[in-house]
Length: 138
Image (cartoon, rainbow, N blue to C red; front, side, top):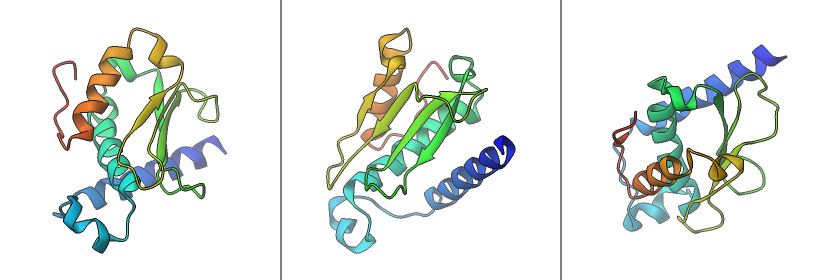
């Protein structure tokens, strides 16, 4: 069951990565024609960068965690979670989400009370502006 969940998560991240390869602008003028909410567009951008910079690069700071992508959840709040790497179904240690028609990204969870707080905050703030840069720590 754990392998099946991991495979589904990998498939979802692959689909996200393929979608990010499209040369589509996500500025205000294209918002209405894309059919996606501002929150989903913002979270796709941030989630893709987080996966690329924290996990695909095998960043040691994020090795104890894995990403659970919930961009297309039924609650209408696109988000991704960081959960313990060895316990995919475990309690989220970080929640990154946006809701409604807002592109404002919220970040909370126990990791925001620890040593990664500044790094996570700086990365999310940078990616939210459209930057795909991984910063200096990755």
